Image (tube, rainbow, N blue to C red; front, side, top):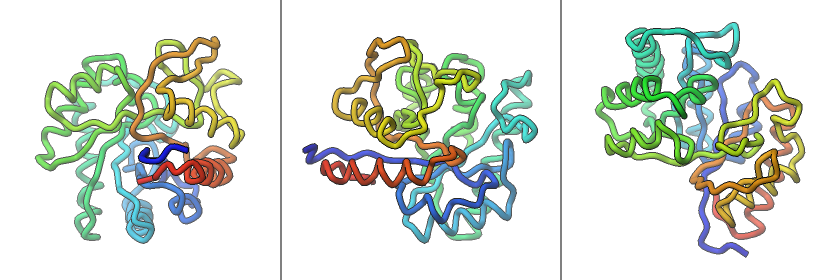
Length: 247
């Protein structure tokens, strides 16, 4: 039993799959695509309304402006151009939320932008500057021990450390590349064991078999995983059995 433990479970949504109504009942926060890699004003409105219906916290999910590659390949962009793109995505999303009388809870970069900000100070700084320009108290979902996490803390931006429920890790806490066959955890039982180890022991078992220290306040399940609904059902069910609160 793990009485007293509370974790956030988040899911990436608004990416054109239309499965949000089936996923949001199982999570406590969501990251809505805001036009960079997927999504448009219409999908943002639909998904934001669903999030409100299921009392799910709402986050912006900006990315490199690259619909063709779903934001999963790094782009060569100047800091100024990247800043403009990310700010436009977040501002556009905030305008949608304003019209629906909803609040922005957090920002979580997507895909290659997220992975680059984990280790590259220039990229991380651009995202931090966008958040500073918002002038509203929003949280930033970031990997534990990352460059962007450390920069955010220096700038007194509240962070939530994020880990990935359905992805395998390398020893440096980077995610195993999606090009590799062992990148993704597809089975609900494996996802639960992965998450439970990170919650209960603050360690993650990497693909080399070595366990590495990790902290996580929120766990992401990717909304485009083929088994996502079963994974969320099983994961949240098992956590509740162990008296872990999802909030």
